[in-house]
Amino acid sequence: MRLYFQTSNGVRRLIGQPHNRAEAYRIITQFLDDHNYRSYYFREWKENDEIWIDAGSWSEFFILIEES
Image (cartoon, rainbow, N blue to C red; front, side, top):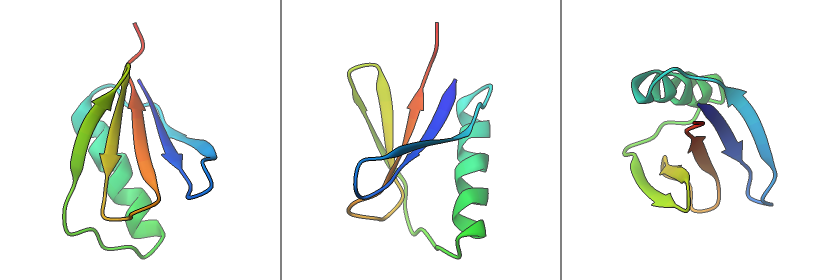
């Protein structure tokens, strides 16, 4: 798996390579803590073969790609 953070201008940055979804959420939580951002919810959906995760920002997302 690869976990990306997508900025508001559409640039993706690799932030981790989790082994499962629980680890992906730990990486996301640590990323948010490091940037002093408090999320009140997580919402996810699938687009093509990518899992998009909304952590409360209207323009920035986390993207999880499961590699086969």
